[in-house]
Length: 103
Image (cartoon, rainbow, N blue to C red; front, side, top):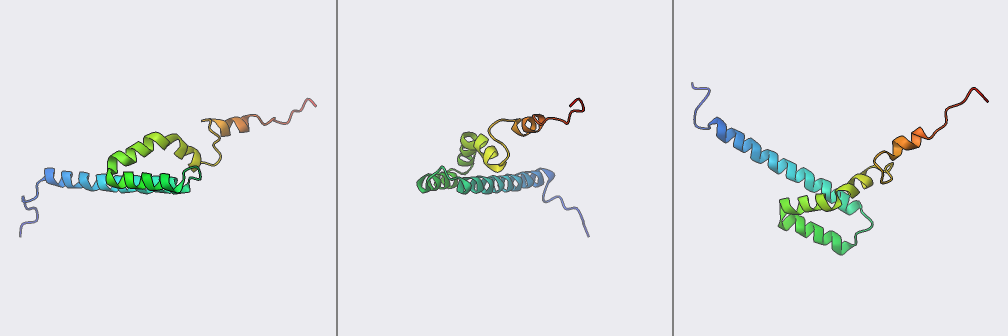
């Protein structure tokens, strides 16, 4: 009984894992893009349909275009405490006055 057969070399196994990883990443990004797209109120129904068709007809290019065009907006819509500035939450907490003992 041979446990390790040489019929499927290591290079083919790595290539298969890379293909599966690529599919997994694309599906994950596609779900992420669709969640952001359908959460938006500033895009009409025809804009949403256009983005969906674009991401389905040209899968990788469509998802990458959406991430490039709407990437920063995705972060702002994902985090409700973010008001456009990178450090706005930290500044809000830094503005609080500490109780002073001099008064």
